[in-house]
Amino acid sequence: MSYLVPHFIFDSYSGITPDFLLSKGIKFVLCDIDNTLVTYDDPEPTKEVTSWLCKMKNAGIEIIFLSNNEKERVTRFARDTGYKGYADSGKPLTGKARKIMKEAGALQSNTAVLGDQIYTDMLLGARLGLSLRIFVPPIKDKKTLFFRFKRLLERPVLYRYNRMHKKT
Image (cartoon, rainbow, N blue to C red; front, side):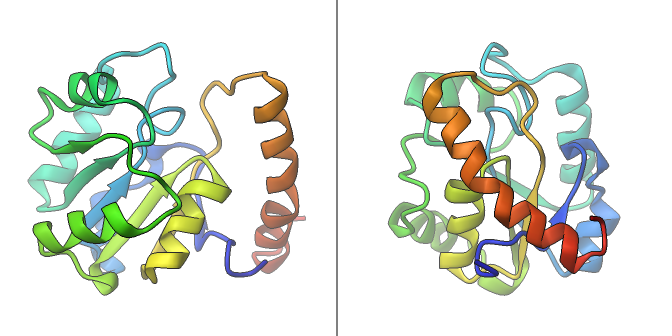
């Protein structure tokens, strides 16, 4: 289970600063979109997300949008950000992500993953051997039985993180 435990949990993407990432040697972030940066209902970045992305760009940090969502959604979201977006990524499978990292010049040692799901985003980061896995709670979670079950399965992993960081 420790394989799935994030290295850091932030309340929101907005708490993750360029200084924090650079202090960890991070130059690339494989970043989920839905429920990590915006809700499923937001087709484009909000002003807050755009501001955060601008800070990252100014610091030389490359954001790579990596989503399991469909091409139309990811393309529309990434269109005006100056960053690339990849849809249908197959997370937590690593094939597409490895190819994207290679094309970008990203290494395991200078790449982080940022997302709201343990069994897709954090598992992908672990399977890729990334040096930093960052979890944020979902912004507005779906209430379907599937999502509720998935969140239930995540609880022991999050509990372990809290125990490791003495936040019980």
